[in-house]
Image (tube, rainbow, N blue to C red; front, top):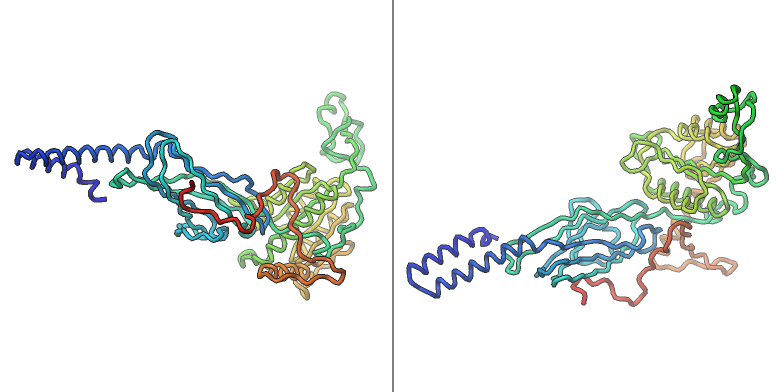
Length: 455
């Protein structure tokens, strides 16, 4: 305000006029205005001291269709009150539910939510905010901008909080029968269930080198001690290994861009296969020719059986970037060197060229089970021959599921099946590692989040 810039000159001038007129009232008014001005100046300089803004997100992972509960907390941790304060926090526009008090931001897809209140000494205020999950991806909350002033409003003060909070929306997950895949042995005969294989991660001892042993098997320290080549002996393992290779290349050339709807179907199919593999006891992993955000390397989640392995795969699928870093066959060839014998490779792709087909045939020829999940549109089958490799086309099933979900979004109830079963899609199952459970949506009848000052 212009008054905040000239208040001192005005009060001094008024004080001089009072002296010249020998008017005690004018002098008293000048002294009062000067004291008020210094009080306002002090207040504006310290009003933001120990004012803390934070977001509390109990669970920052969710599937599409769920809600995320956020608590926006404002704390005045000092004796000096805050006469008024406005908080503007950037959130994804697609995640807001009936939010009326918003303002534009400089970031596409984000808007500012607006909250205003006043704070007494050592007061804490919570604003609840319910977010619906936007499409699959990685989202941020923030930065927040706080605006306040002194008690008279002469000196406005702004501060921007650079801290960000994030949440991840997983891709959709379906059961294999919903995708038209057989629930029993969807990837062919399982070689790992009946046979015992060696586990490279568990070394039982050493033995003399035999022709044909891999160079990675040689124990160089033991060979130096015994002055003869020694090979590692691994403990047996019955763990089944499942590696899912995702081809995010949806166009014939990278410069043509990508098809968003097709990419989402590819990732949903991958997530569904990972869920099934984890539930049936596979050690699962995932590779792709896409990348993490702000990364220039192809995405890779090593095969593992940890309790949070499914969550790691789903998080990778949630943030994968459509920009291809290399061809999928290059990624598979590099990963094939790490395969234990009898491992299963599932390739999820909408395109098949000669190079990718050759890579899959080499993996199959090395004693591994290979299955291809095709998202090619009906009538656009692969031109390349894949002898000995199962190919399942799930494009039609995906279209059917999307049409059914679109019907449910409009409020139409699905028709019951001939067997009388409810065909409503079941909610996606959560990965075992994500605990506690995601917050539930607000029950019907509960009032929406108030933006005004809570009691």
